[in-house]
Image (cartoon, rainbow, N blue to C red; front, side):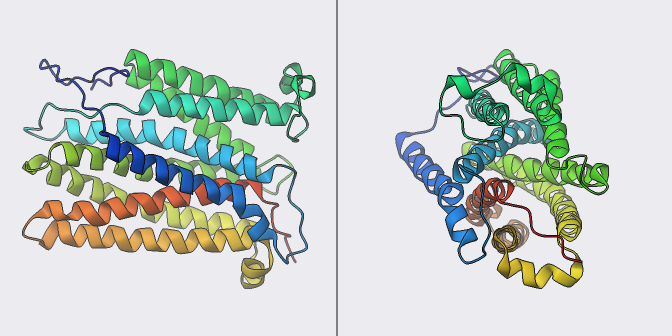
Amino acid sequence: MRLTGPTAETTGDEGVRARRPGFGRAAALLALVTLGALIPLLGPSAALHGTGEAAAPGAGGIGLLRAVLFAGLSVPLGELFVHRLARRLPGIPPERPYSWAPLAACAGFVAALALAAVVSAGDLIPRGPGDIDIGGLYGSRDGRLALLEVNAFLLAALCAFLRRPAAQMGALAAVVAAEALRAHPTTEQSPLTGSGLTLVHLTCAALWAGGLLHALRLLRLWRGGPAGAVLLGRYARVAAVLLAAITATGVCSSLRRMPPGTVLDQLTSTAYGRTLLAKTVLVAAVALLALWARIRLRRAPDPLTAYTPARAELIALGAVVAVSGLLTALPLPIRWT
């Protein structure tokens, strides 16, 4: 398996030049990204309205940075995942779409660097270079984890440019591990259990979203051939397992922060609960779209008609990523007893 840098991508000995997206698709993608960015930017005020809670300064910006970080993790992981699936298919076309992994890893690096600056300023938005204490990052757990994410994304970007998928996978795994540890400080009850749940949840979510993105790009490139439908079917079988793991770990993580007897109250009376409820509705919509795509894939005369609901599924997954970024920036719910 070989992944290319930003100019071309090859498979086997044929070396087919990568295809770049057209202007219309690029404009549509930019519009979707802009709309997705509004979710974490405007979400805190809407989620906090009437709850009596107060968010940290700059919660919208931090939520946006987290969403960019999650997207920067999902895209290269999804490419690696789908390339591995496609490599095992007989008679696949040699064409490969232009790789987005280098750009995504660079975006993740920028987001991780900005978040590290926030940590160095005492979890406040720095107003100038004087507020940033890079050396102080080494003195705290959160600071060291922030530095690990910065370095791991930088390494992942370099590996994507240099076509080193094995090393790139290791760097991305380090990002996932750092995020899982960051989300559960040592002061939390059973932090390792929470980190383990987040590790599985984040890994499966990144593979699902990023994998679907790259599978659809390949499907569009191979339209008219049987390989695209076979690849989407193979991805769908794995995605069903990923969805089950995401659901199980998500429920367990939610119950750790909102005990069963308080869930209904906190889902409507806290910013975290409201955002979690919105994410749950979106995930349910994604699951229905995924089911629709799978039914078309199996029963329609032309299996490639599954492309339309699968594309809608991808757009909804993008909204889930944006809401997930917002969720990490909101105050945690009160653990009522």
